[in-house]
Length: 368
Image 1 (cartoon, rainbow, N blue to C red):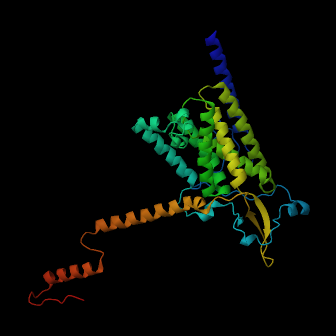
Image 2 (image 1 turned 90 degrees about the horizontal axis):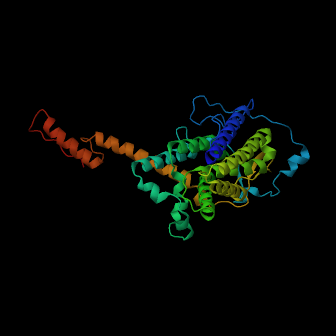
């Protein structure tokens, strides 16, 4: 009898997953980003734009779904005329690639590399999994709070890693483009920690994986699209609808599969939604002074400290500076006979001329 029930449950799971994959392949608009559904939490490979570094990437055309009326447009204007002096207000570009150098990776790609590195360390040393996995009793007793963050970069199997990374790579670039690297990174980490915290309160089972953080990215993007629907248009509505259906399907699959940590997913989605509501972009229209035109500005409910927002750019600059120094060191190592110190260089030239002059009785002078 139990075997029969197990077969029925497996069949239902297979039908639900097949239906979800079919829907994710079928809902593809003619232009713009395609929509997919998270399958624990795998999204359709067709969702999202192509990568920043893809050779076939083409910037989508800016299409207007409908013209806003004058009354609707006035309702989205910023009332503050001195918005340029407000530290909480800043112009919103929504184009992260313009602010990044051509050969610089996005932070979504860097997070993908970090997860791959974390799993590689797990394979190399299995003790890393024991030290980083989520343990509810340790977290609730306040003994090892680092376990709220470390499970985000650990995974149980290559399939688990692949599914989470495909999901992150599909929905992450769009969210990072809208939020900026600083807020995106903070939201990703806070979502993962929130998912592990909620899971610790609800279940004693150990858990690991980046799915809670990925659900947080989905929740943050959902709040952003619904808050700024006047600017996102029909494409924003389609992506928002796809996110809603993805969450419903994943929660249903989680209830059917006891190995899935549904509380971690829901906690991550809630954490990302709250981060987006309080710190995410809240867009308005504003007037440049002296009839300079209109600009879209971002005035969040609360702004993250500039130190936190600038962490990604500071780290990128530090790594770039380190790479440049490594290049200089490599050049120095390849030129052993030519010291870089000017005084040492003059001394070396003097020694060279001593032994290379035609007449040994003529000794060159040492330059001061």
